[in-house]
Image 1 (cartoon, one colour):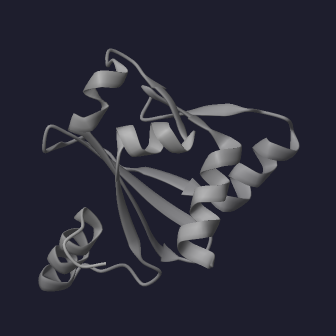
Image 2 (cartoon, helix red, strand yellow):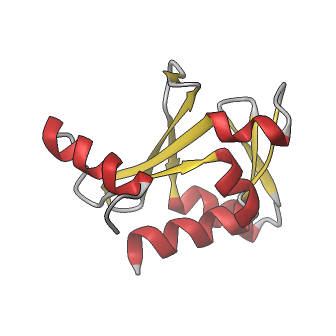
Length: 120
């Protein structure tokens, strides 16, 4: 996987000594939108999704930290997501949820993404 955005992101984390125990993955909003994970972001069009990045990190099993970066600037507070809460929402038939109060995500596709990246 050399010379990809993920490669440089992981190399940067290793140099700083901040590599989470279960891994960390960086996606652009446009990548998440193409995968069906990201539905919409308030005040941004689909064309602007290339300027927005999300990182998913896990230092504890079943718990994920999501950070958002807009044009390189980090949003103030990361979101904590628990896989148990996502599965409960899926069981209740809830299709989407809000991250950071502005980003709407598809719960089924988010669970699929987290399972694929962190557990397989």
